[in-house]
Length: 116
Image (cartoon, rainbow, N blue to C red; front, side, top):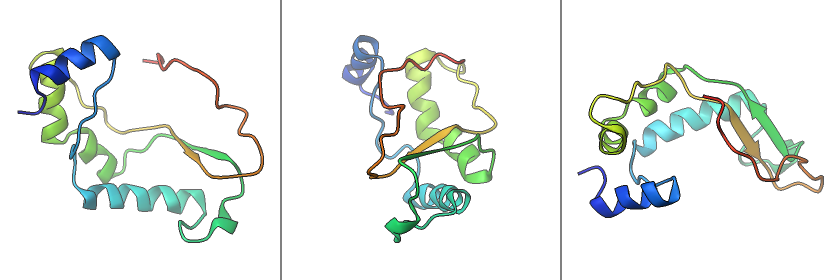
């Protein structure tokens, strides 16, 4: 089962639920490699982290599409919104990437994601 009854109730009450193992570590690594490439930075070189936050646009590369269509994610969403109601997107994004930095990011206050 993708979500327990308690997780569904938690989603209803809190507006979010943690879904472990929604997709494989290998898939996450492939997506992460694309993000690092586009950042022009290295995960192993903090001197390449030049800003407190960098925003990357939407991604329709195969790892992102596959993550949005994973069987575990789809099963969880079927439990929350009803079987077949979830229409997987053709990509994912945007990605705000945050780094430890001396400068303030100037975007770390409260916000509501309702663009869709």
